[in-house]
Length: 98
Image 1 (cartoon, rainbow, N blue to C red):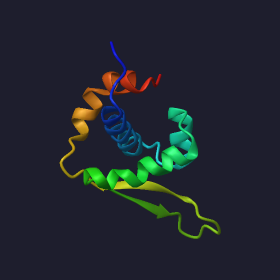
Image 2 (image 1 turned 120 degrees about the vertical axis):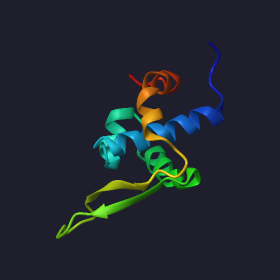
Image 3 (image 1 turned 30 degrees about the vertical axis):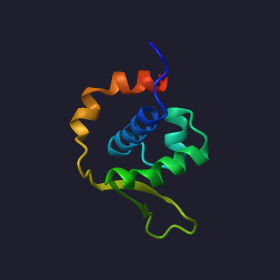
Image 4 (image 1 turned 120 degrees about the horizontal axis):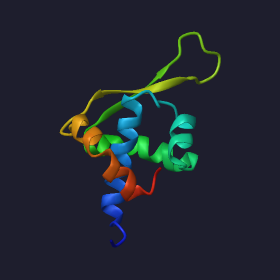
């Protein structure tokens, strides 16, 4: 099979990060650990979720002295999270994730 296009890889990466947030892997360090992404790629991917109309926001931990918290998806827009879960092996395989 040939290499996936940049468009498909980018789309699948966003879907996978959204899925991770939904399932509790909801901080930049946790996303980095789960995917092997560099910090900047993880941050850019989180920011790019809005381009798919996925509303994702950072919720700061109450009383935290430093910027601590997690990401939460409040609206999936046109994306079906059940489709992502059902197609996870294909998405991860396309991205080369374990």
